Image 1 (cartoon, rainbow, N blue to C red):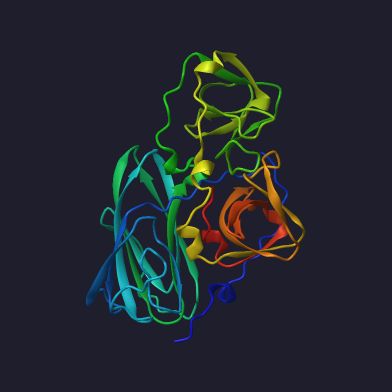
Image 2: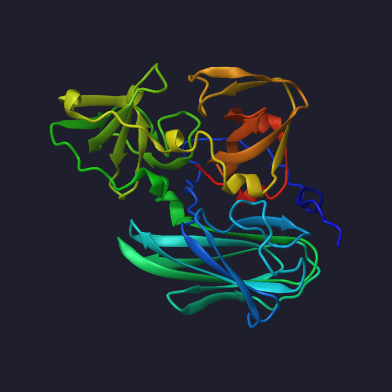
Length: 356
């Protein structure tokens, strides 16, 4: 059959919005690791033909062709382009307690089971719609081991499956690749002063996603510090709602011995040159001005170069503020960096691009 570009199916251009510290926070999106996919050469999960491992999550855009292995290049053996099904399973450890919102992007159908319970069933929805979005919530305890199953069916046309989750209300802003929250160092605490509110962000950058607002006159233990922006230090804290994130040292009156606070890398160092998930979605941006191309989502970080007006970039990540895209992580001429989102036209399944 003819392979159809997902960019033709769906074009999403996000409207500009006024961004303030009071805007609703967001959560970084988790895709999970080490999924096992069992493929069936029918639409009823009966005629098993192959098993594959997907280390980086369910993040697939196979267009009009057959499903691909984890290398995103080799077709799964014995599976056709249409009328196939698959069952993906994994066990994930949920580090932080809370209510999580799960999002499923699918073309054609899927169902989701959490610990064996059917929580979303659109498996037999043979529809003419090319792309649909579903969501649901689940409550988890800290460090809970959760078995997840996603059953997928492709009838005809394009094959798309994206499954991800994050803490509701923005509590999960720190990616699981960062590791567990370090033990606070009692010798240094921070006191916010004379500001309306200090944004709590996913990383030590002005353009990182906002996960909450820290109010004035509350003390917090400092977990880590980072000086990557150069002008002001940033401090990693856990607020009184249990949310972990970064705040600018510009608004802190710090007491104690900062030499005892570890200076650390962040999730943004871990995603400098991703090679797996975002490449599958084929989300493209077109610059609407000459764009500064920076190492991190902040005007205070190193300039990698400039991208001319009208050039295409591959979008592989994003930060969000006020419910709108804020900065975009892009690959341009084999270099990965960040550009300011409001001056970029986007095409593709933009909502499925990971939030950082």
